[in-house]
Length: 449
Ligand code: GDP
Ligand code: MG
Image 1 (spheres, helix red, strand yellow):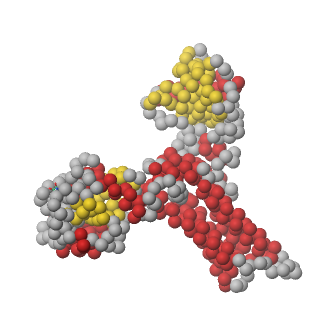
Image 2: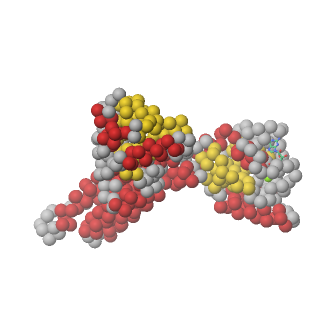
Image 3: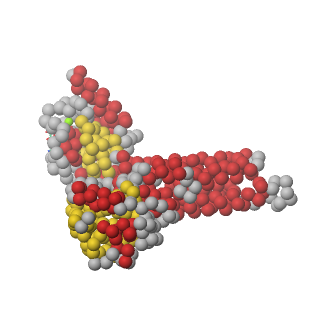
């Protein structure tokens, strides 16, 4: 395979830039551009040397060069990493020099693709690398690490092995149905297949949680006028985005902003206060608020704890009861007048939107609401769309296999469906993925990864 090279750090000014090259000519090319105490081709793996990158006798930069020797490198090939000063022009010049010496510019994801092709990573592990880079918070990172470490591949692999065992059991029978072979032992088939379905469905369940972490949560802030919705929005954002006044009916349009709250991105909409009004403009605002409430994935319902419970509050409680919601009893800094008996909910937070006090418990509550566990150290793996689609194909086929078996007609069909399910899983881990699937996946990586 050719020797590839790329700038692996972002192409901005920074402290350092790293240029990486991999392939059989990585060391000879390094020899011809690097002047240091030891030639790169004489250096042991996992060692680095200080020296200069020189073009036609002129020094481009002083650098640290690290050598990784096949197969003990990320790609499995000889690899050289050059850390130079973090200038955009400089890093590009170093890369240009390497390419002039025979390396090829690496397409996106090519280093990780080579790691996959050399058997160092499964496809799902490679996707874990992608997730590590895009992780925005602790939960995503823990999941990505577990995926990178192969926990998902191992789990899928063990299901696939179990399926192979079951198919093997049936194969002799279905391959030679006319021979005088004793009937296949099917006494456990029903429970074995059900068990596989359960295991795969368990993996599928993590998709929605991962989606919440990756894509954020559509969150509507609702409540009657003047309870402090806009103040809450501004407090969460950390700056004054929504207009706050003591006049009821100030917010009319829906104001949208995204904010990170702990591990979550809330895609917030601050809405008009819900009340009966004759003002036509406010009326439109109230309709929009109600729509937002209905479509939201999470509702932050704000109530004023310094006032008595009202009929509108009751209507709002009714509207949110079947939606994931958190009740915020606001203005906790003022004397309390609200009768808490009306709130039979477990998801209640007493807060002061003015000062932010009480809001620190919000991330934990959101985590519980979306069943993301109390802490991020129980490494649940959040599968991505490709993985979800493969696992769900596999589940579909195993279910068909089970249905065929239960209908009692023939075991042939069972083995056919089991094979299809197995194919879906092996495509997932990459053991039987087509070139198109592999290329498509690595195109989503950055250049230099
Ligand atoms: P909205 O109509 O629900 O958007 O309410 P606003 O955010 O516009 O706030 C209405 C009034 O309540 C303003 O005068 C705010 O300063 C006040 N307010 C909001 N939050 C608090 C709070 O936590 N404590 C106190 N004392 N006043 C608050
Ligand atoms: Mg408002």
